[in-house]
Amino acid sequence: MRIRYKKWARPELEASSFYRDEPEKLKGKWKEEFENKNQHLHLELGCGKGQFIAKLALENQDINYIAIDLVDAMLGLAKRNIEQAYKEADIEPTNVLITRFDIERILFLFSDKDNIERIYINFCNPWPRGKHRKKRLTHSIQLEKYKQFLKENGKIYFKTDDDELFESSLIYFEQSGFKIIKKTYDLHQEPIFEKNIETEHEKMFSEQGIKIKACIASRI
Image 1: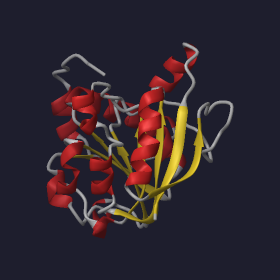
Image 2 (image 1 turned 90 degrees about the vertical axis):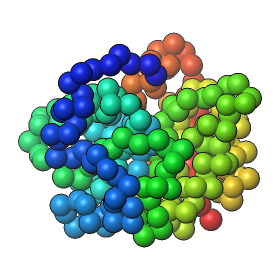
Image 3 (image 1 turned 60 degrees about the horizontal axis):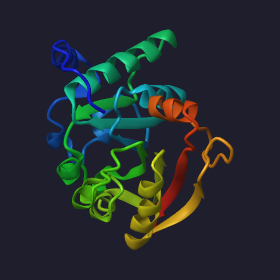
């Protein structure tokens, strides 16, 4: 998604208690960065405006969350959405961290010591042109990277509106040694998640009559 430059985003992020500006320094030490004793660590790749992670983290205070995006403007909006959600609940956001980074270089951020239990990938860029498909967040190249810090039996939760991306991703998962535990070609009619938190894109596509595809893949 393209978004206009927001001059306030960078200053607000740098002043935020839950934004981390040099995430490479936390590789292998992410759990220590949270001011709580939670042992569960989940990760969202490409958090966008942050509505999903804001609600997810708020509803699961016993789990710590890290959300990554590459664009300051997006992260600025995510920061504001997280703050607003926690303010309405009268809770401090101590179980969520956001950071700016290129997901293609994700092995600079995480190692097996971080023991990530779950990865969320929601409505990522489908990169439809052949020469760009290796950029997909669900491509085998990326999945092999995730395997280096996703714990054994850790899960990837994936949602998309794009038929071709979904079919290709199912192949990518199997090629990379993941087991598809659940899948659906119409998430709203055939729920496969414990609770589905609807993203901004999901709502938009659903209103257009586009069915939401989803799966849960386990590292085996």
